[in-house]
Length: 336
Image: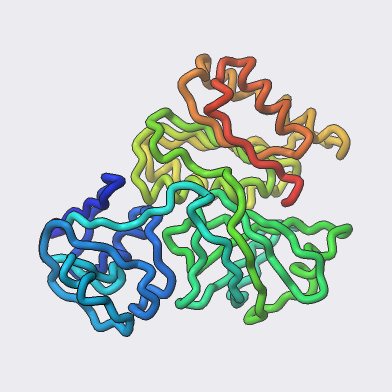
């Protein structure tokens, strides 16, 4: 029988099984809890039991002070429940809450999913998990190569395993390094996180996501985080691509639509040749299906990734159609 954990002062709550630690269950539920090692060594996940009983506290090397212990202090990564719990704990809610980190990661997978697109999977050390909010990006650093900022395409709920979507660009040294030289088990440093393209977790408005090409990466992170939070408002994903094989995770998107009644997925591929200089105009033209599908856009939240020069035009178009400017969050593909 699952118990319920309520986090103060946010009031967020989630279910926990008796065999789980509070940290494990909280991360699975999309909580942005503070932690680093998840093994009882660092003390970063320290919280305080306000109400409820623990079944066990697993051994940990970090030493709590007597004052902490008498006040109900525990390490969330070591604590398992015996009842419903009310816990005081710090949660990240704003980009400025999160310190900049630099972590050496290991390449665990490099997968070509389309002719010009690679999925890069990195693993952090257990003792140095990346703290970030869904939708943010980090700087990838390789020796002798100009650093590049890339969006994390995976969910913070499993932040030891980081995914990135990389486009093959013959004019970009970093892209060529990923496609031609990087090997599994290689080391790659990351620094960050950066950016404010994050989910408004307090909003109850339905959501429209507009992804362009590999701008699907940060959108994927946002959707996975929303799923972990079990947000129940409707969500409509439009994925616009400039290449015929651009929907490189099409089946994954369709699985969301199959699993969740309130999730709609619309894929918009290229159906005719478009010159590079016309891609932005083509993107804006294909956005018009949103107006056809949704007659009133005033009550929606929008998350948009688009070609750099099209960002302001896309936002202006949505406002022209009735969307509230303050409910539109955008991320430029210039760094993708």
